[in-house]
Picture 1 (cartoon, rainbow, N blue to C red):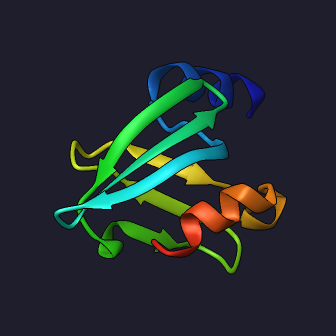
Picture 2 (cartoon, rainbow, N blue to C red):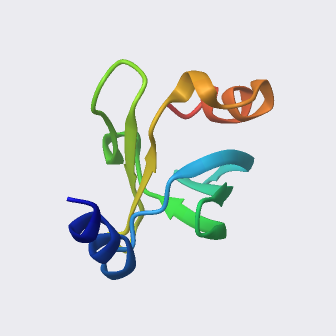
Length: 89
């Protein structure tokens, strides 16, 4: 299992968000700037329909290019990240 997970980690771009630095909406498109386990990213989300609640605390966000970003545990994010995402999710 460890070997398969290591291979998937290198072949599939599915970063885990660890902190949200900015979240702004303009003309119906939300731009999220975040720290992830693979570095800082900036991506756009077309609508709230692109946010999937997998469990009570786990989210999967799909950007306008089809890339997915995971928040494994919303409760582990800092207060500012919650505040920034709060209006969007």
